[in-house]
Length: 406
Image 1: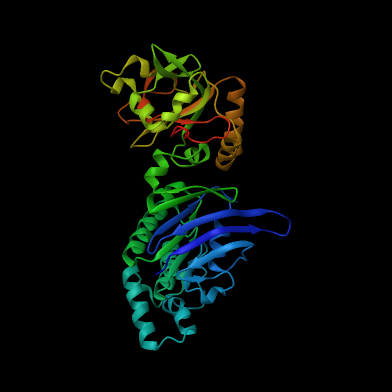
Image 2: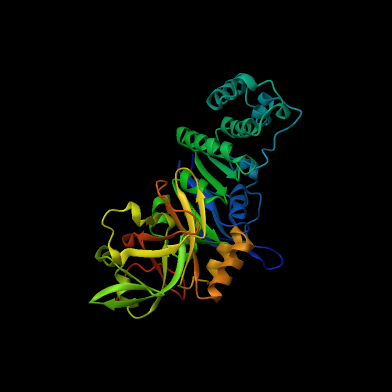
């Protein structure tokens, strides 16, 4: 096992494209670090530089006590797990798992022990004589994991290892990989574009955008205290609703003005975000997570000043939740970060955002308790948990938290 450190790491291609910029990241010994971000953000390039499969333009990568910038991949003592498994079709499961050890000239008895031990951990005991074509996708992924485990490397590097599996199998395998990693206690860097994978698997998650690290923290902290609009919009499913608003005083208290709607800012929010006081009379971007709204019919004694009227335009019953879509008379935040997030979901999402923005309206999503009886076309009231509102600067997209030092 080993600590992995990336210090001011850059990757600039011959045409001037900056795939990774000034990346500073420390992965502790035995830690499961997830790199997450939209397609093309540079996360796989960063992983490949750690592996030695991509030359480093500038900066330093250390694995354990060694600077490995010029160390060949095979001498870095790491094991990679790819999204396409990279199994040899003509070899049995046993031989696929043993291949790297044979190249290292590990004694035959030791190879047999390591392979059978790994097979037992992964539930592959009965499959050791089969070839890859006779395996399911999940079994092939287990073999790829087994090939990495038997080498007993200092670190695992995993590049979208579950992307070729169906949804149900992905859920099963992500739990299995997380369990294995903690059981083996091997330093791991895991690349994915799926933020649910990132949140459920990582000890810490590093969010990357356009080659630059946006925030690195434990999953809950990313969710509750995103550093900027991009992180806020990327982490969470469905995504956070981001709306243009302004702050004002009413009866001495600070409120959020969303179109014609006014929401009070509770004292505990002001205490946690003292910088909000500086936005009195100014514009701000307010974020409301879908799960922080509820059907008022299900909330006892919900205050009138936390209610949001809505007409249901679409209802999605998910069993454990009911997701509704509606429009409010307040403009959405449509900065570069929001556009990038929308395009990553699909161009039609961006088109919808821009179309409603042109009318001064925003399409909003709420995730409700499944006991709600709301149907498409219904006029309802939603209760907003104002203690969980998020605030961002409209100019630079940064989260509004601490007051500036004086």
